[in-house]
Length: 249
Ligand code: PEP
Image (tube, rainbow, N blue to C red; front, side):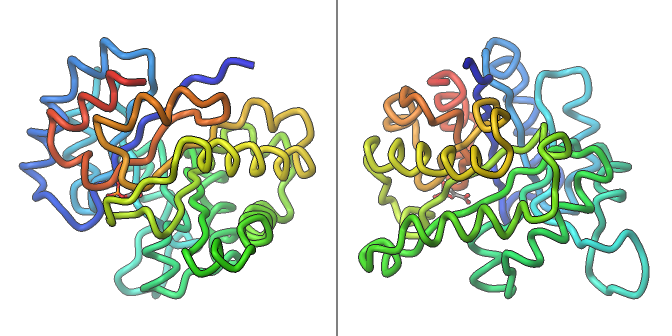
């Protein structure tokens, strides 16, 4: 089955609103020329202005996280409906930095996913093992637990827009990349887990690879049959670097 590649930039805690707007303007032409779906995820503060700047281009905008409640006494949080109103179409969920620094669990990812799907936003659900887990032979156990935990209670029909981002924690921001074979093997395994949950829809779910994706390794990673795009951190912050990755797709 052919799946449209999705290349998403996770800007994390970087770029002012003006810098984000300038970056999206610089990416407009490369995104229009690409066969891939191109997404940028600014800070919550930047979503509105960046989405405005991206309007009419081939670039979609996403949030980096959202709370499961829609509104109320949750100081410092933003909701899926606020992201949508600001112009977002995507939301990253369960990024390993959220799991590591902000106590995100499979259970809270599942709650956030419910809120994101209720707003008709496209979720990019992040999963991935630590080096200790991989070295301890627990890769499949961890990936299986994370996928099943995040997707618990949903029907296949509800998950029709789901995107999974496989991001080995040891490859994020470290300059270390999974080998193409490691990436392909993990993606094929994740797809087999998905098949057990959503049946035939598993062949349509896009699975992005993330972890030190750069211009010089993107093409090889993206050539793997089960690698349907990339979630890019550091290399999404400069127009030239991200453009090269978009072009590789
Ligand atoms: C990420 O933040 O999801 C990521 C993969 O970061 P980097 O590309 O910098 O490793």
